[in-house]
Image 1 (cartoon, chains in turn purple, red):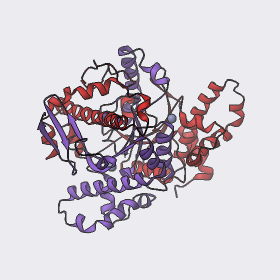
Image 2 (image 1 turned 135 degrees about the vertical axis):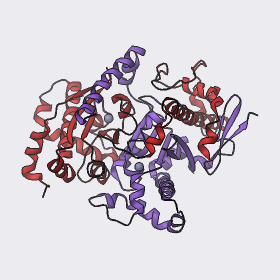
Image 3 (image 1 turned 30 degrees about the horizontal axis):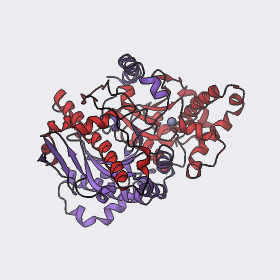
Image 4 (image 1 turned 120 degrees about the vertical axis):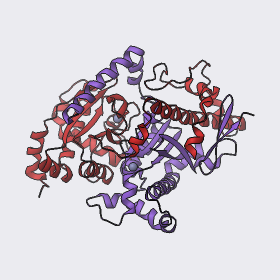
Length: 231
Length: 278
Ligand SMILES: [Zn+2]
Ligand SMILES: [Zn+2]
């Protein structure tokens, strides 16, 4: 497809989507126009393979979103900070989900010693620091893909620390039980898993169980999930 | 491995918890585009406000359970979505894993009602996305500048879309004479857009109409800010792309409006002062 065709495609596809939504549910757009009350703030990577609302199986109005290069939460970045402030104070979201992903270009860039150029080296500095702090563990990983995965996970853990120490977030956790989750999206299988950082560890054992009719899914501390028979 | 173990759990999708959690959402679930979700038959059960009291132990447990439920729903939805993609195309995620080659950079508002991919029908892998409060492109913001640089220089996107929306809370907040603390430095950029177009905006008597026009002018000015970057100017001189588009999303009908931003003219216009091609 030539590039002007893809452009036309996006606009005409929007037309079709709007028509479909309105046909299925005439109240869909009037309700959206009425305002937003999302329960989730998503902080993820700009990577085109991580469309948050789609991979979460959610609808317009459900997820407030900030996406940047390598889902970095930098303490003095006013862009991310303004998003957090707006979502937590003004919208009162119940969850903050910080999501890293496999095959992240930013994470791979931070593992290289080459200078990227422009402003990117400065933006990726927090990731470089993660690499420095975990050099031994990262260097021991022989598979390059796995090393990119591991630094991206460590990056989420670092981001969670910044989030948990943000004054606004701290207050909301203490006052109304705001939850902060570190998760990881595996592009190779399309699934998200919890990394067991954030507020999750504060909940007593058993709270991290997804109960089904015939079984239950248990999230362990390392994010491994197991299926057990229903009790 | 995690994924194969999870793949064994189709029964979990019929979880009662999940369907009651779904039924509580404000947006009707009757029209999933890509998913088959459990139908919401249970009556909505919202925890009563007295339960918010910190002394009320049971209440606190209730809230914890409620919070947990809404999060579980997300994981269940994600599993259904992943399974559905594989059912349609067994190699879907393998192809994605191989790398990204998006033609678009989308710079939009964080507002939950504008998921870029859903409203444009673009698939995973097709749009590189940055979303912030009121879709701003600020010169000193390394966050958005890194996104533009990466998208243009490394991914070589062909189109950059700045997408605003009517009813933007960020734009509204910037029109309010109020100290918003930490948000002041960010929202200040919208106040500056107003100042640039003060005459035109002041001449609009109806407040709602003035607000809508400010949303459009904000998109226009952010498009100009993209054109002012070195990455854009250099790539355009060399390759003839990317080109810039200014769009506004309207919640009332779900449609995107193309503001027909005159990219060539903007480029010529700004390069007298902001030329960074050398
Ligand atoms: Zn990434
Ligand atoms: Zn907005």
